[in-house]
Length: 192
Ligand code: AMP
Image (cartoon, rainbow, N blue to C red; front, side, top):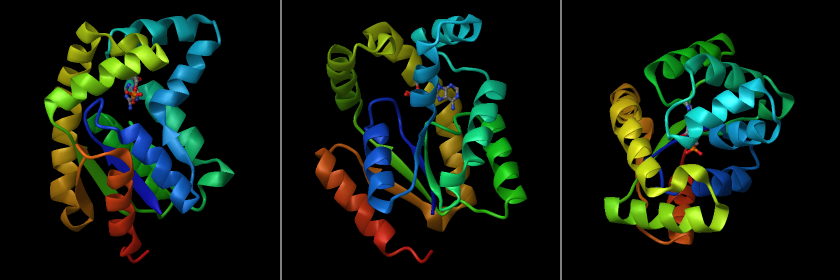
């Protein structure tokens, strides 16, 4: 099963993507986590990445496409995977489309989590305290939300019109467990 999660920063998409991946025993591919891991090695690339990520800007498509194509080629992705945080731009979406076509694979479901803006800011501020993420500071949150609206939201609209019956819109204002239940319930009925 191949799933893509969409949603603004703070929608809980990382949390849900991880829980759903666990539930269906497939890998959770979070590009944010992969990039944050790269920051732990101190080298020229990590310095460049940190500069972009701390500002809430997007890392280049070339870097992301390379990361994702390598990861998807790993053995554990043969049974499917959950993409979280990718694709974020049209270039990435086209690249993903090409890789999947070349492997004769298709996206099974796209899960778009929406959440009220007041909840987004509340959640990101509390995460900022807990995880000490540099990009959860208030001014950076604003940039990340605007990148999302500018680049990623049109992309989710594109997927919605391309795969209308596989596009699931989920209310992310509920408690974590309730959101997971809602997603599992829908995926249970999917013919794969
Ligand atoms: P996330 O954890 O998904 O919110 O990602 C954290 C940061 O990593 C983002 O604000 C971007 O700087 C970078 N990032 C993650 N995924 C992507 C992507 N698909 N394209 C570009 N930048 C990304």
